[in-house]
Image (cartoon, rainbow, N blue to C red):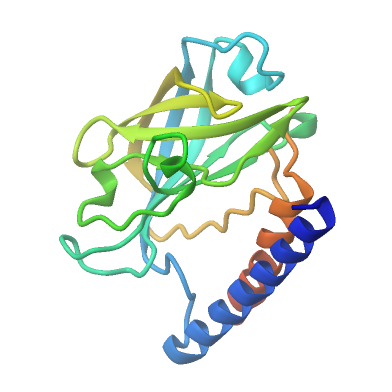
Length: 220
């Protein structure tokens, strides 16, 4: 398949996703996905940096203040089937030491499964990946979080380069809940320093994120 065909397909998929989000919002009169969640203060501790990743956050030992939000895509009650979401805002991890946003969703962990959404009854105890790859220099990069306890108070962070095996880089310690907080995460606006979304990934995500931003303004 040619590059042009990939980009065309990605644009079509992105527009379709945006339309779907708009229809869901029209029916529910609210945020179409991840409408309910819990926001917490957190700390990311990088203790096993990956040499050669080209990403400052992953290449240096250190501790980083974060905001973490745990949610279910369709806001189903605990024990019902859903897709889990784990959003992480890492302070000073973006260009110019601005915050960087990372979004994770329930997936498998294998070479193919890491790119496929997965329904689960207990998403906060299942692995989640960033689903679509980022470019880090000449390499493809994907991130994985794996909760180490049912309440996801400790979450292991790993990185996969070029579709290879996962390498653990650190631990996210999830702290006190920020009651009433409802931050909006956008990895296209708040990018991780040293990474860039491939054009086809942006073509899929941008229409949906643009719709989500507009709907977010309407519900506030």
